[in-house]
Length: 117
Image (cartoon, rainbow, N blue to C red; front, top):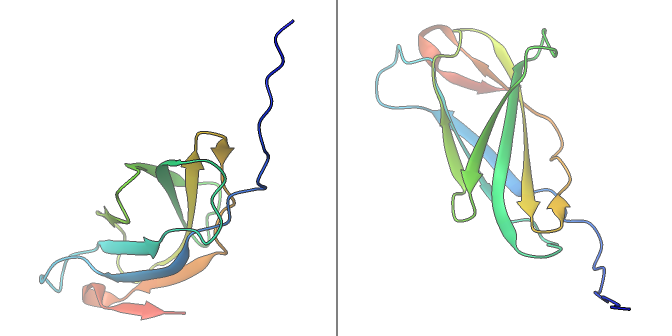
């Protein structure tokens, strides 16, 4: 009989310091750059990150972007002007997915100026 033992360190916490900025210099661009920092507690090794975003008033219309382990930012393009988006980020480790971040709500403005709500 083979017995495999490993230490369970707990869940991987959510990424921290999530920020959004307007994508590009074009004021008519309806995109966001989302950046974050590595979770404070990691169980295993980080394999990548998932960024989920949705129109705040339509939570069933979510989209997910997956990244590599060294990537701490994504670009979300083709968003709708003057629309609120709810964004969550989590790490993926070799032991499974970490916790989603708390929701971060951002609104694109006319001409895609960014306002944090």
